[in-house]
Image 1 (cartoon, rainbow, N blue to C red):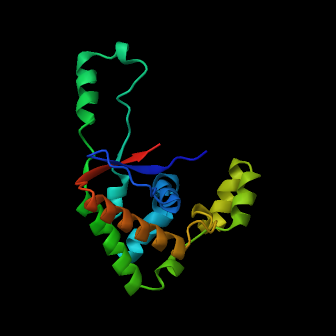
Image 2: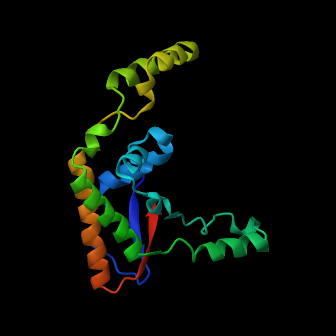
Length: 182
């Protein structure tokens, strides 16, 4: 079971629409493949900053071991409950910027570098010295595999869905939200 993004609104409004799975997968990769991730590649290709989507809130304030925390740590955790609120407009600005730039640079996705399934399979069966040699001879093996979840159409549709959700939130007087990742 994977981890997924979802929205928490400041007025407890809940949309029936969910954070698009493809974008959960997309944003999750920033830590998985570092600078070679699809998200970082697209940031460079489209000259856009997706870091707002890394501003996630973890509800670590509900520790099972709360009785073992000192007062300062407890206060710090309580204060953290008030952080990570993002204005709807800030998220929507990034979403609309992506939509606009993707329309202008229609071939942007063809510039994304992917590894092959072959690289992935070969690396699994190698010992450390063999993998170092293979990685030196095949630098693209450090890039993610194109598993078709991250297609141009899927990513674009995901951003369109987020834009619809942001409009729905605005219509229901949501001013801020937190991105949660569970």
